Amino acid sequence: MLYNKVFYEDREIKNERLELTDKGSLYFLGSNVTFRNCTLVLKVSGRNLLFDEGTRFIDCTFEVKQELKNHQQWVFASLTGCRFKGRLSGCDFGHWPDYSERAGHGAIEDCDFTEARMTGCRIMGSDPATLRFPQWPCFTILDPIGRARELNSVQWPGQVGPIVIETLGKQPPGTVALTEDATAIAKRFDTTPEELRTVIEKFDCILY
Image (cartoon, rainbow, N blue to C red):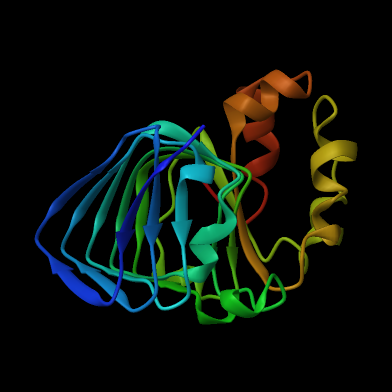
């Protein structure tokens, strides 16, 4: 398939609504571009959405109309004061120089995920205190590596303990927060959101 290539680079874009929705296009949000107070409507897969170091989003809104899966390229971008709406799974945000040299330029601060539904999404190398995470049935584990032993000290329902919790210590260094969806976790690992919540409520390192 021959894709139509759409480039945004070497400029500042203000107060625009950008529809990145054509599945026959590759969108390159490239070097030295700043999006300020823009709304970006996303309805393509992660492979159609390509970021580069130096891409900056300031006070932007992302409307995710199609679940965005396993999109690590957010760590190439700098995100400040942005809002996310829609479903995100397996996405990483923040500063993660171990991922690649280009990811050393990534950052996230003062962003709002309260209107997003997140599963298996990580915040890397940034201050989670500046972020607003989605509420229940999503939940966010702060410092998952440092708190792994504590979280493993209790009985989790279904297969959540051996499959989800015991692997926290294997998250990449720099993982400061991990957001999951209790509904999705319960469905996959033989439990219910209610049973999960009774355990989650015991920990001050879990936001919900």
